[in-house]
Length: 114
Image (cartoon, rainbow, N blue to C red; front, side, top):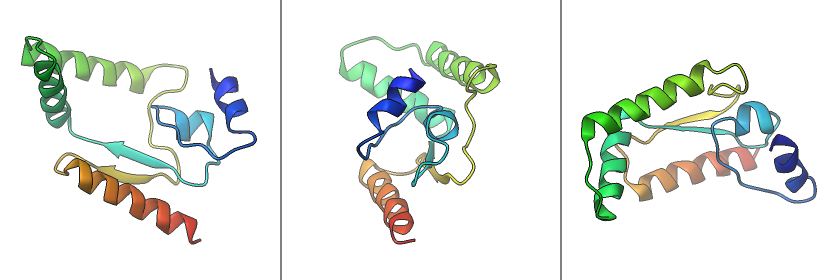
């Protein structure tokens, strides 16, 4: 997958998201952002998405799934989840979608002007 992602970006600018994009796939990217949110916030957001789709939600099971995935991703041998060197950190826990967008654009603008 990494080779394919790199080939896609060979001749054009790209925006990609993923848990290893800035640390493994594109460690020399012009702009790297580590977008984070507390597990409580992520549980709440995911539950709202599932409920909006008409699905029943067990918050404790959902919390456990999210925390287990985070643990697996942070401790895996290949491409573990880490904040890439040079990546701007944005904690979206208490931000609205519009505020997240503004924060992302601010990082992009700041990095584009250097």
